[in-house]
Image 1 (cartoon, helix red, strand yellow):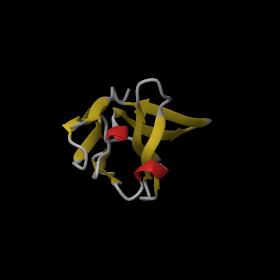
Image 2: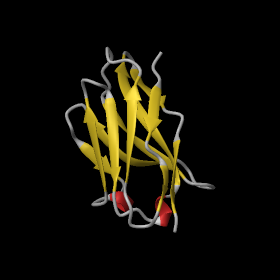
Image 3: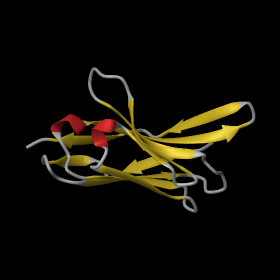
Length: 119
């Protein structure tokens, strides 16, 4: 069993910054990819950013140039640095860890952390 524990959400003014962190409860497992999704009220959950164990990254077009995803493989921790935040970035942000298993993939999810961008 793996738990993902998120921290760093909160209220910030437009143009401000936040840093999210997500730590896996186990460091004896390896995850092919870790990343962040978000879900705003009335909308579907969407990928924000992801990073593989080889440090390849993928970003949603809406956050490119503003958000940076990084990870510490030894600690099984993933980070999301969010700069130049906009009101449309307001959502619950979920940490994701994807593990390659025999026969497919297994996804783990955090409990979610609220990010609110408002003046």
